[in-house]
Length: 409
Image 1 (cartoon, rainbow, N blue to C red):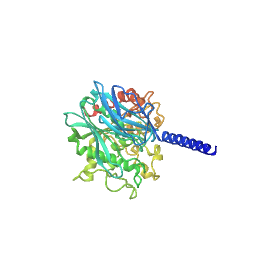
Image 2 (tube, rainbow, N blue to C red):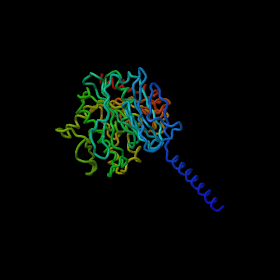
Image 3 (tube, helix red, strand yellow):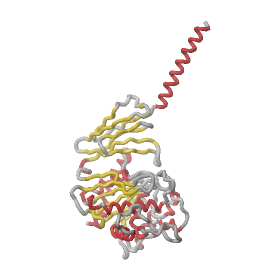
Image 4 (cartoon, rainbow, N blue to C red):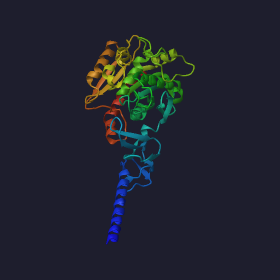
């Protein structure tokens, strides 16, 4: 009996161990959810189990095919995390390899072919690398055209998230009609969020924007653009940075930023070879003819929580509202939109900048978009963001483009 009991106990232990092992394996598996596509299809290899549970380290190959009349926007995977609760990683070719290391949703999005058929789209042009992250931009250039005005977009995300990809919907809308070469730029994230040892204070981000503009001007002819005709736009944090590009360009210089008492000069992250800082300053100042900073803050008093600076001189220097030029010295027409339901940027944040522009004789069109919230110019693969863009982004991108046309055409 003692032998039989011991043997039974051994069997029980073995069974329990197997159950625990299986449970551990299940706990270490990741759930992969496939998002139903619209206007196209995609395949995943190897085929997923019915329950969607996949072992860590599994490499998935996703291949996408658009329906007739449509083109691939992106293959993507989305996971929980990041500033806005979810983060998407996107790929713009017909095949993407994904290594499963977390729970994720996988999918593909498609757009109408007439949005992209006449565009040469160039992704990830690196213009500088002052820190860990290479700084880059994307180009949406109408085919077979020359000397078009440049529309330069600066993305938002609290100066601390997103990249140039999130503005591709707006880029495609501004490129409609083949009247603009559109460039969507990236920049460093504020403080240490890029992994840089030294914090990237706000003026560094503005220097990145100036560096991107200098690089785009240098290569404008390659894209079919005219470096002397530039419109700048951006949303949210990019609204602040695009307004900074337009209004603070008079402060470009090499005397340092706050290193000497009362001296705040922006040194572009990229400098074209053979050009002096004064040449770059004049070229950027002269080229920026119009600005469309959307639902952004324009005074540091409205975004002090994002910058590790307290000196008033510094705060004034990164505030476009403190440096609006008189129209007699430099005309910079402004087109500004804000959603009436925006919980982040209130009318009281935008209106003082509008008044400052008007007091200096600048042309300004300020539209409050009824029913719109924040970030309606963003483009992400989730259906809600794309629906919001279709409802508000598309029509007000057309309004923005019309405003640009009034300056350039």
